[in-house]
Image (cartoon, rainbow, N blue to C red; front, top):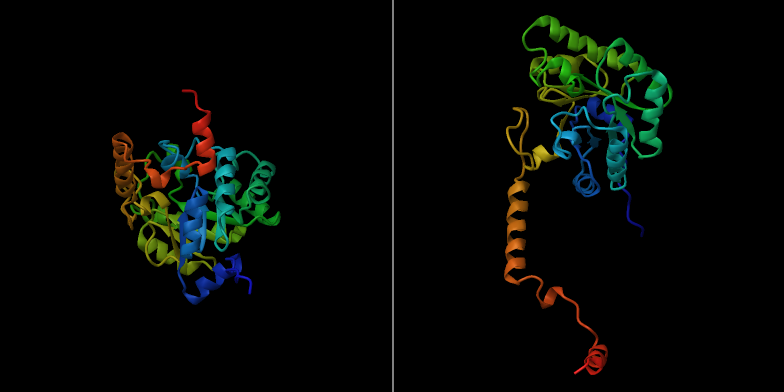
Length: 288
């Protein structure tokens, strides 16, 4: 019998998970092998985040990431995925100028890169119009409120939002509601107090995906490199590391270097040999 194909995660699936109280697991991925492993593990959603600018490309922010780069990485991910919903981050300046350009760029993620949805940061009046336009064009949109990394030049830091005053917390709640009203199928809540995350989650009918927003959110997302122990330096408080791949890779690379330098690699088991008749002919044909 043919192998049974895994059920693909859809937008109605995610909404049903919220209704049932079943948590949604989300991780970022930026390449084929990482996405393949996450999909095999049973991840619900893979976010091809513009965070790749920081964890893959080494930039200090997500600002420099381009549409072309995001399309390449998204295509790499979708080619590996059989079950998870793949959401592509729309990078800085891909949805800032006009509704028409926003739709054109968002559609490229679906048509050229195979994504199932896009993510758009912010909830300004102009941003909401673009979310509405994308949804009208049948492009599913995940929203993103609270700390919005593409606004780092405005914020000046990656500090928690909505913690110091009721006005800012109320504004974030209003943003989340507005994103839902604009037609987003889910919303990321980043770096906000857990109490606010709980209030927003209870207030919305669409799933909330927290990243530093508390356990009450309908789901959680973290960056692949943070979770797997690849990231150097200080990590945000909300990150939990589940492996130490940096040490594993460093140790493996060290053993490889040692083997190469001592001649232990490659040995006969990792080398090819001529067929006996070819070896005999080669020996006979060699000049004395």
